[in-house]
Image 1 (tube, rainbow, N blue to C red):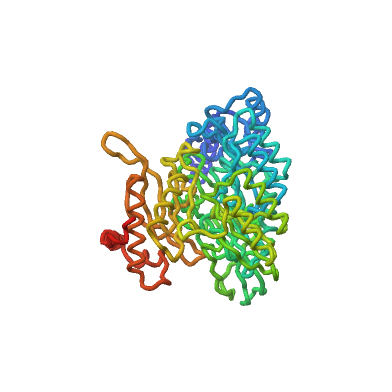
Image 2: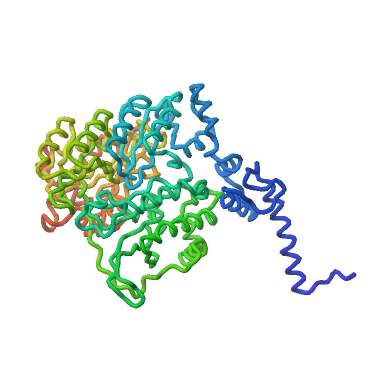
Length: 596
């Protein structure tokens, strides 16, 4: 028998042997879950998509990261009994269990605090008054007696002891809410226009879409256990920005007036791959979707991400990196394969220009599209609200509005449907709580993450520093236009420092033999909805906090002295100069203007 083979035989044999070796490699996975047959073969069951992706990574010669192996051994959503057992014993999770417990919305935040933080899911960020009261009661009974509004129009309850973890989750469920999948490798809270349904300029009410997306996730197991976390936002064209271009999937309402093959109406532009902490906005895919197509297409995007995302390197596992590796067109083709149809291209459509949002439209009193009604935007000090304030806000919303409380990505909240005649009494009642519907030009756009008071990753006390910085600047400057200052504690960029007028990311600064809290300073960032889409540029590095307020002050003095007109925004001023010129202007800021 000859051992000579023709080319076709060689190719077949090579593929055959490669297949055997790939199967052997896949069989070395640490522990096969119920979704994969014990004897090998194609994974089955509710987690088949995730397991098949893991198998392919190993077959290609990769090694799963520890988190992927842990997810494979037993799905985190199936670990309720373990969590309940720890709560009964008064114990916090250890090791990999800290990560796995985040699937239920519980974050063990030691060493910053020896407690849990619970993050909720509130689609479109809208609560009923009775839910707000219930969360206040839960925060008092099982947490620290307060909640934080997040930059995903969501709420977090902190300082939850180990024994109260399950009681807190059950209290949340009793309110018709959930924390399921709000952390770890899952889709985070679905954001939408906070003024949905009441906005005078909006094109589409995002509430039904956010609700549908929320329940799609809760009822599709393959939406869990992704390569990394995932964000989705719907912008209906309203006045208050949603920052959809910072999300993995952004939907932007657009009015199409015609074009060959296009029926006039409201469509959504599909954007993909935003992650500003990694210096990328979502890109325009050139695809237009009818509203009813958005949720199933989002599901197809998530499945394509789950299939092709990196399971061997968590630093390169976000959607942005999948798209960069595959190419935009190739990834869209995979989405279409998962969706089961070719998606509608925007070429040839006639669309009206985007109506811009107001970066500070979430503050103050604003008339609604409903005649005689208004929404009131409350300024919360860096997003924090006490349980007592939560109950009182709920009472005001129910007594003078429709009982709706609307959270925003700007860490504040709105009370909607307040009659003209009741505006004054609402403002007075809120003032009695220490809350206001107006604020200084500094506080209107002040954003801060949790900081090292409650997060182990943060390098500085961002919330405390934000309030002190505002106090300092307000006594020295008379700004006539709002400035957005974003303070974030670490590279995760929860406060999105790259899209602030002034963005501050915490850092440890060496001072002699000691290390002190400080910041790197970035300026001139913004988002698409206000026609300011740009990443902030580095202005200064390793600035100790006690040196930061004078630095920011000089920069703002330079802006006031050298802007082209009172109408020129800080963003426009920054983009008009290079960084060296801005530093020089700040250094020459008149001393008299800096006097206390």
